[in-house]
Image (cartoon, rainbow, N blue to C red):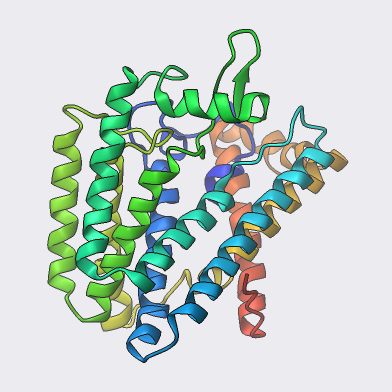
Length: 336
């Protein structure tokens, strides 16, 4: 997220580091579903053993809901900071952390109260039901689809995109599209259970099946991150399962270095801290001069405009990686 959200120049970004304009799926479109998938895996590894150990379900439920509220609240505060510092036209209530919080709550409660079979039934019902809703809406086109129409009706000018003249709007983290995002998190919940019980072959096979099913579904329902279509859930979930199996094989079994650990133990802190840094630097007028003087002015004549834009993004990630490693070495793990 840090890499793709912070290029030096949005006019010069390599195609794999951009989201698909509407239909389609680029490598960048894998990032958010992978994050939600890992949320589900973490719930399986963290909450399920406590349930099996006899922990009171009411106490677990309280902990899940409290953390979900904190994550949503943190997302609202981050958007409030951006609105205040950057003098934005409106405050946006939906967002990445808000969606993570809602998905965490839904998957956490599923882990506490639903048996695996019911979790699968809920997941399948969401995928099929959401497909039916989109089809009933009559179109998958921008603004005209039912998810966008609901966003516009509920939020009006507070939506991420809104046209006052037509009353049409859209929010990529809107209400209706959060339903299939919950399905992505439930896939992670089930994958984490397989991993916890050593069923790695089942994890790999399920990844291949999900990829195939997602690809087949595109004959009727396109891949679309903005709408978080059901085919997109299976396609990205398949890649996430295979990536999880690969990480288990390389890191857990063959002791490859866990390069992402420092970010992982402070994931939300790094995300919020980096975003706040961008907002402050932009408000102070420092962002563009840092890019121009540090990267673009001397790199563009030698390498063209795309290289400095990417170098700036990589430097930003490296800086926050250093911060995360420094915090990790001192045992500073910020829990939300």
